[in-house]
Length: 260
Ligand SMILES: NC(=O)c1ccc[n+]([C@@H]2O[C@H](COP(=O)([O-])OP(=O)(O)OC[C@H]3O[C@@H](n4cnc5c(N)ncnc54)[C@H](OP(=O)(O)O)[C@@H]3O)[C@@H](O)[C@H]2O)c1
Image 1: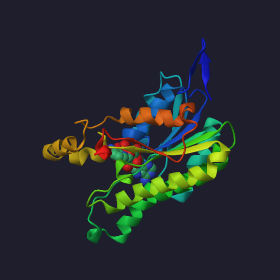
Image 2: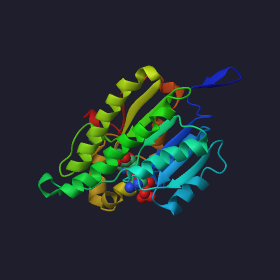
Image 3: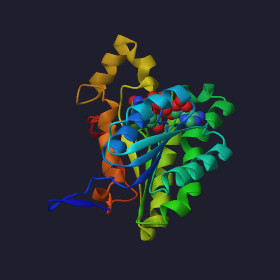
Image 4: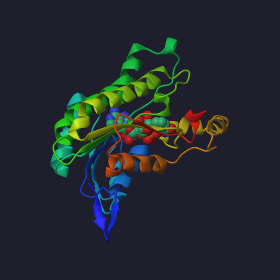
């Protein structure tokens, strides 16, 4: 879907598109919700914190699109169905699903309890599967759909002592490819986005230690940590008509980390 203005077609325009963005209360999810609204989309942002979601919604007040919010814990399958149904009702349909909500638990494989493994996988992989399944009829209904699975550079390479997170993020790239193949003829593109180090609450404990922060910068060829908006701009591309011939792929935005 594109908009022509004075002969210029903006293939990254999202006017009239309806998006569900999980984990929109802060960090990368908030930046994606705002970037979509800036391009004209209507967004339903989902997370657990009502207060932080309200801040995300307020940030879109003067933008061409709009952000509505829903408080939900995506570890619950019932809440996942509610989120998708709410998006369809409040936005009048659903064209774009961004599976972004996740959390991390760093531990060595020998020290990782089964309950920890299950908890990480439940949010970082299973919820994405259930959201995609629930959104399926709506994404296929109108003028083509998009699924963006926010994986990580740790979905393409591993690090030590982060076994559940690394496994879930690799699994999410598998889910991306499998769904992409099934839906390619339905004009629904399914891609993964793989950020490197980004300055958000998830990374805050590491960045609080100057030695660890310096180490992360050294590991990144660009020599710095990304801002959430730099990931959101890649999400705009994957949500827009500009990526209509791209499916089953992983767009890595990591300052060169995985090029080494
Ligand atoms: N930051 C990085 O360096 C980095 C690097 C690579 C990949 N990523 C990926 O990017 C995505 C966003 O990460 P981020 O850095 O923006 O993390 P973040 O700042 O910790 O944000 C995580 C988001 O997920 C939501 N969330 C957590 N648990 C939830 C639950 N049970 N139900 C609903 N929402 C839940 C949080 O909101 P509430 O707490 O309000 O629920 C928050 O909005 C994740 O998939 C992450 O793995 C991040």
